[in-house]
Length: 523
Image 1 (spheres, one colour):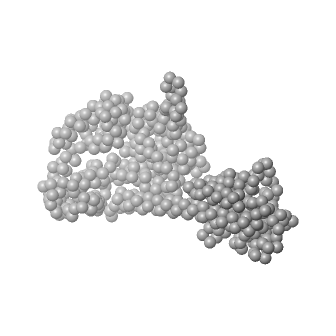
Image 2: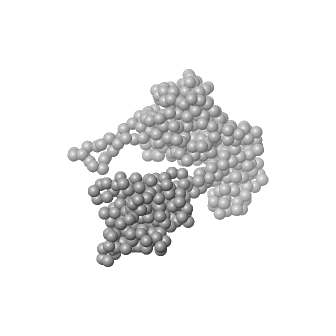
Image 3: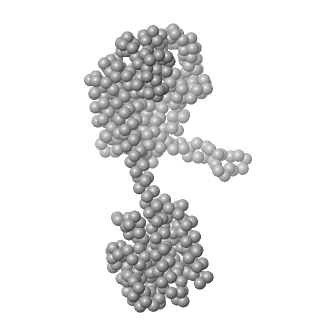
């Protein structure tokens, strides 16, 4: 009896140790089989698991390494009696002189001798459905009644069923979370689309139509438009509303310094990082860095400000695009990565002076082309945008602030050279600074005069906002840093101790994009 109790204790201890690994079928079954092999090394075990589509067999080996006879018996049972076993969730035996199952009731238990039994079997039930069968040759020797083997196997089958059920629940929950995540992202993208295309103008309706047609297609998309029109937002919306939304969206700024862009965009490159096991004298081990094409595999690669690519990088990108699949849509990048390209530029690349951007590359990037109109071409949409941003910001601030009629009229008459981004930032500032329930005209004049002065003149940086000395100082510092660093934003940002995002914000805020492009073309 000590042996009987010891075997049972070993088996159930082994099963409880693998419950925390029951997230995936392979891990679950490996844990079950490994635990049984350790708990009862003299016993041979087989698991037959079915997901309704595929049936999989798992076997342990006996101490001497043999197991062919048991495998033959189990596979024979699958061919001759498995359907019967799944329909009748009851323990059974396979006798030495038969391949078919014999279901056990009290009469059968009393009439069969243990030495006649080749295999004991029990169905594995999860969520009231038979998902498999567990079989053993025996747990105990012939001196122990057969009933003990049957009862232990039945309890073990229940425990394995619970473990497999847990794995199935986790899988279903993961699938549900993925669907919920995709649905939420699609909803957010729809809301973003609603902001970019908000209004009743013909231009807004055409823009929305172009985005909705482009999103489900696999074609490369080129988006052009003035700063602040929402080009990068549109690129993200196209990705989220496409069939690639569950895969990565990778953004590369083409205004990066040449060497950094080479590593970021093309085929990965090798960086050098300290390895976990350092070599003597502090030597560094090469650590491979994945390129943008590899990181975006299956998804979308956004080339932001693609017009800033140098001639050498334009040629290199064009070589990669030669790997286009039939139909000229998805790109086969390094390692055959399947990537959809979306590119963005603030300038009309086809009309650039001195033909600095290759037309053949633009044709590759712009199978579909979307031009985002500036606000001055859709002025009837301005009231809708102002109301949307004001409502959103007041809700966020917990305020109930409204725009007076004269204020709304003045805002609608403004040129908004910074487009949607300028409208949003201005309205946010008004909402934050408002002290009463209604914003009056006097609160906005200096603000709008300042916004109008944010654009830099063609000859440099002297004419800036008359309402802020800080702006004068900042624009001079930013422009001087750009000039010192050959008009490369990343280097200028490092020079000033700014992040790349902070530098880009200042470039857009002061309208320095055109100045940067002009000076880089002259280099």
